[in-house]
Amino acid sequence: MAGCSHEKKTPVSQADVKKPALMNPFKFHKLIEVSPGQYYDILSWGRGSVDTGAFLILHSDSSGKKYNTTTGDLYGTITDVYNTDMDVDGNPEILVQAKKKDTVNYTTIYAFEFKDNKAQKLDFPKLTGSQKKGYRGNDNFYIEEGKLIREFPVYDGNGKEAKQTTQKRKLEYGLRNNNFTVKQLSKDSTNKAAVKPVAQETVKKAEPDKKQSESKKQHKKTHHRKHRHSD
Image 1 (cartoon, helix red, strand yellow):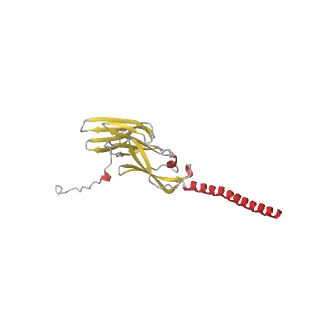
Image 2 (cartoon, helix red, strand yellow):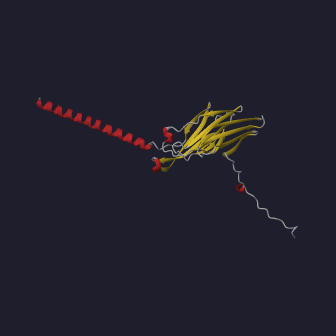
Image 3 (cartoon, helix red, strand yellow):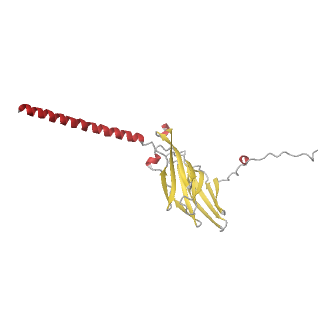
């Protein structure tokens, strides 16, 4: 009976399979396969600090047997990495997203374009004054039709008193001649409050002018009557 017994095997789901833990001093790792034989390993590392360190982009060209390393200072912690070709020139862009504790400059994007096994650093644009209005972080990035999309909730107020509204700001990033382009896709209503006072102020300024003109007309009529009476 012992020889005929069979042990029941429990199927292992992918959710149960844990990723191997990174050894110190490494904190983050993601592998991106751009094309067959073209691999990019993105890592962050550093000892003694959680919010600062460095990042590594290890490019493996297995077909050409070429291997290159790109590194830089890292402020914050890496939350995700994106691969795209926004300018459709056949050269991949690797975008590293890092999150800071500072809610004014919550997210940093480290961007590189790889061409002929060389990395060219791209300057990711900061939010303008109007784009940053009501910004408190909580960015959501994703790739859509080859473009980088950025969404974040808009807050009303400053500091700890700021409250999240139902509005979201949505930006689209593209690339032209290795320079980023930015287009706002969402309708921004944050400036409506600023428009109303201007309109009211214009009306208030117009009212005295109207009264003054009517006063002048009345004065002319009175003067004309006096003149006829004297005749």
